[in-house]
Length: 167
Image 1 (cartoon, one colour):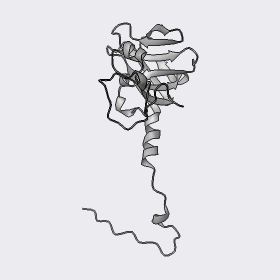
Image 2 (spheres, helix red, strand yellow):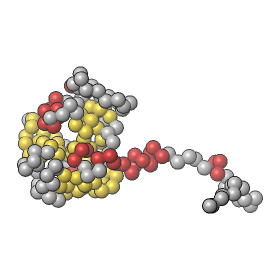
Image 3 (spheres, one colour):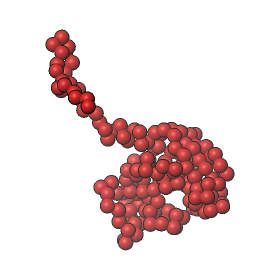
C-alpha cells in the first residue's frame, strides 16, 4: 500500500500549490466532447461516415419538419464543417425537404442521417444518435421549442429558444 506524505513547501521554491488556478474540468470536457474524430452510420450499416474536426453546435431541434422527417418528437443534431466529413460506406440518398434544405438518409433502411441548408454549403448537421458513440456529443441547447409537442418534455436545464438559436 502506497502512503503519501503530506505536501511540504520546498524552502527554496517560490511555487505554491495554493496559487495554482483550479482546472476548469467543464471546459476541458467540452473541448474533448466537441473535437476529434467521429464515426457513425445508419441502422443497417450501408451508409457510414467519418468526421475529423470540431463540432460547431450540439442541439435538440423540436421543429415540425424534424419531427416528421425523424418520426420522433425531437432530433438531436451536431453541426460540423463539410470539409471534415467523409462518407465511408454507400453515400446517402437525399430529399429536398423544403425550398431551402436537403435531408440525407439511407436508401436501404431509411435511417435519417443529415440535414443541410442550401445557403450554408460549408456545414451540415448529422444526427447525434447515428454516431457509434452518441454519448460523446451531448446537446447544449433546444431550438424551435415553439413547436415542441405538449406531451414531450426533457428534464434538463439547457437554454431553450422559441425558434432557432440566438447564435
